[in-house]
Image (cartoon, rainbow, N blue to C red; front, top):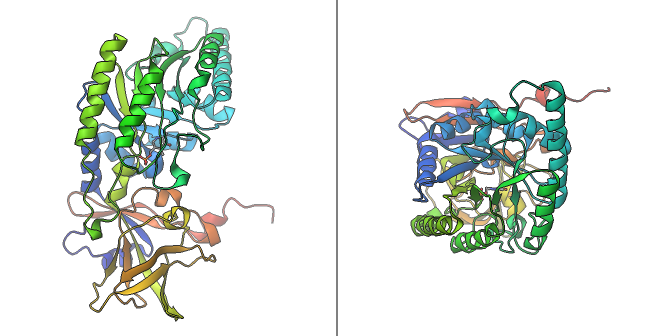
Length: 431
Ligand SMILES: *Cc1c(COP(=O)(O)O)cnc(C)c1O
């Protein structure tokens, strides 16, 4: 990943520690791999930007022809700022406040709701908007005419509903988003109620979607897709089916783990969409929403060892990588490969690599064979591009780190500055 002369040490000298570093070439490769995933003519990739919403990466994703899936008004504004047109920003909400839904309607974003109660709220807001437009601008063209139909949403009143088909999967129970133990989606048994609400508010169901979870054995993707297609049979005017994200990436590359071969999955999905379109009587669009797959492998998180100690038989290496900088190990017991610079000689010793935060749960790697570490050594957490910076916080009032991009031409550019202490204090008042 590091081109000539650019070393982890030089990056940290320039931009400080800790530091997220992304490789443009890898990011583009992943965008292209996802675009090639499903050989079906009406196929589109919506990048789930919650994985990494740095504006520079969003702009690259747009150059590569991806659209976006966003989960909040803030993410929608990031996508708009990166140049995505509103119709390319799919707002998949979970328990959104009415203000957020109103924002989506005003901006002309396609929306997916995931409960009957949110469908009702959305319907009411659409009715209000139609009424306002009728009163205010009786002769001007309504927003409905300005909307692009390229993704199946043709105007105010088009909506998508997220279902829970009963199928869920994921690397940790916290990220399984389908099945019996999750807050997400409308259950198939509620289809008659969905239809009632669509009628009541004069809405059209343009698409249905689901997202069964994240980072799981990929056969589950097809099992889930089959279940979503079964639900599609209950609705007669759909334009698209959106099967969600969750694509697997190999986190154990240093142990020889190879990337998962997605080709057979994509081919089978294309076949299913082809067959179902014939049955349905029109070509339906097939959408996927990869987050991790697009962003994880282009990123490493660099940090510095700040102390070493032995407690009983255990070797501890303390670093500036607390869970405010990188939450995945603490939150999900996630495993990430670790490289050490300079590449030390010496026999590996089993080490707990921990952070600088005031909790015992604060660690990057437990019981990990690592070269003997010393203060000043640089550690590089691999595959940290997804759910790394985007989950970082200012806990303990530690500034979130900077982000740098290694460009395709080999130069490095800073794409986000480190938080400042003044910035962290700026919103407080009342002293
Ligand atoms: C998080 C999420 C995704 C992306 O999941 P990955 O596992 O990162 O691919 C896609 N769709 C929805 C609705 C999500 O919530």
